[in-house]
Image 1 (spheres, rainbow, N blue to C red):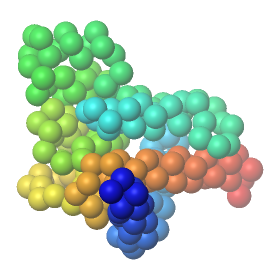
Image 2: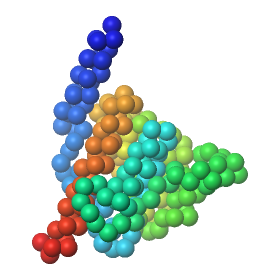
Image 3: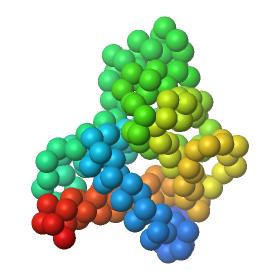
Image 4: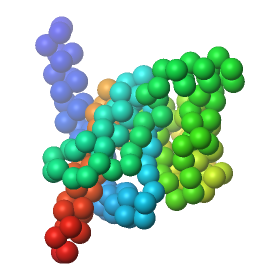
Length: 193
């Protein structure tokens, strides 16, 4: 029974990662170049998520302020779900639905980029954050699973799966590939290539 369950999960993971729409070269290259240009222009990126996606958002921000593979100067990336004090104060005073959007308003500016991770794409606090970013002229991208989403004016990336673990695994793959590609672009720029 357990053997069959584990084999099914392995097969499911292989199927998702082998799906062409899970790892689209042009989208990943485009985002890497977009982020590199944002850094070059003196702007910043921010990540945000709930639960497991919150952990991935922290991880992604750290790849830029620290390093993914190649050493580089610290890059202006932050995670909006890291401060327990901010999150609990905003949730207490304004409601959980606004705990990220108020931080977007506080920390982001026109030309910055917000990448929000949400497996369902339906979390109200995530959607409010994306809308706040859009309203202030920041760029906004939602990484989610293969669910319906009626959000407009925001770029949406969908993992071809409705399984939370598989969605989060692909989000991590996207983040790592983009972070590594940005480091390559930085190294190329530093060398004058």
